Length: 638
Image (cartoon, rainbow, N blue to C red; front, side, top):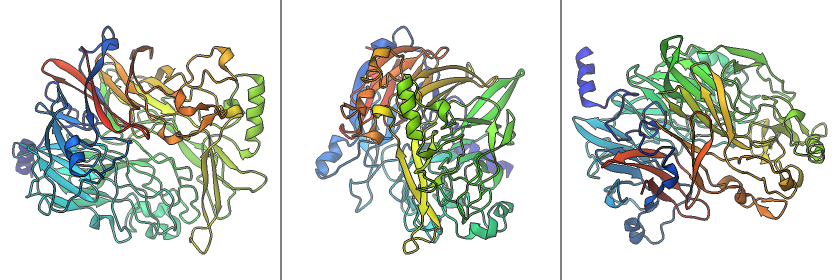
């Protein structure tokens, strides 16, 4: 075993967290720990305002568009390039790997395709780089295939079945297809993949979420893991009446992280069927809504921590756990830090899962829905403090003026309100339309950024007020007693948001002591709305999945385009997209002050990256929208 480990160490990439070769960006999120940090300082506070577009590259390159003029791609372009050995590599909007020049964006190659492959397809958030026998290769998911391509764009025919692996069989007998939007994650000689499942299941017997792992050299299946346990697992006791036998989902749909020195993958799991009703799966439902550390070589659980018991709120973990080293009491602590939709940070010792700050089980509101039984308590971290409001009560409604506050309170009378974990109400019972969920936002799949020099964690987040409800299931269509009813945004008075600002924010948290050091709104928001324009308000923020990137000198945050609220208007006059400005902002890491704002051709849709090439620093931003085509845009100093 020792000799085999030594051989593997020589064949494969360096350990997670180790500094990449100078100037490179070798992993989807900068490193295997999802820190989204690079130690570059050429672009700094003194010159960042001079950034300009160095090159632009279409999401569907002209070479492919010319081959099939009917090919169409979405503007929701999530792909993030890698920079390895003086080249950029990325999936395009059709899911094919390309290599292009770091200084011009010019095409170097587009991968070889399999016989019968069409251009039509879709890309993931990222690809993986790994070295085998001293040679680099790229691993990517396209449709239901995991494939391997060498650094000349040729298919690695020794991998899997002539260069690719069919991902459908590993999903189990209930699954008929495979979908995923994440990024392959490498740990040692293993690559792991999650899966995306439906949020609106028709029945309780849905396919299980499955993490599949394969040998990076051969493509041979190594192991699978499902957050829904089998009967011989002690966690099965948390599924009453053997509901583990038929319950589905609990997938890992976002990217994950890994620590090659510890030999662990860190998996953020999601909720089980059904998102908002669980009367058919009573109990805590391990290992859903959990951080699960599994051994890279075997998939066996090393430790797990559930962050939501018996989820009824779609509060699945939607970002990769961030693997960071923090200083506490003069010692270095290897930590796994999980951001959440609810706006809380959970921090654990990476090797053991022991909480770095105590986590308390606190009483929460209980459901009155027939057949339902909520968990009497839920876990709350004592530090850091929540970075988003966690109540839908009167204390968090709009209060710009007494008149607006009175109107907002009047709107809330039609709903059940309360603290976080207030259960979804049955629609139109006891005179209520349903419940209000205030934390319909929190952190998104972009996660945060971490500065290892200062111990600061930077968290983009947002809050929106949602009307959530459940409705009786139609026996002719489902065997679920209740199903998801509403999940729609609630407008406040005169088209303003119902809740208090900021509607989107960035929070700076010091992980050495768990303290919040600053918070700033992420954009102007509706300051010019006719009802409040005269108040001369500060920045109010906007609800968007913003993309963070930290460097040695700055925090960059890319503003997302409002694709999720396209077409809605403020007071019937001002389009909500007017709240957004398609900007990349540079922030002071110590204070959160905006240093510069750089206008982009469209909103930022994917995670950013940065690299050095021939002495010059570049920042690459995936952009696009429902109105503008997908592109990579590279920024640099003149």
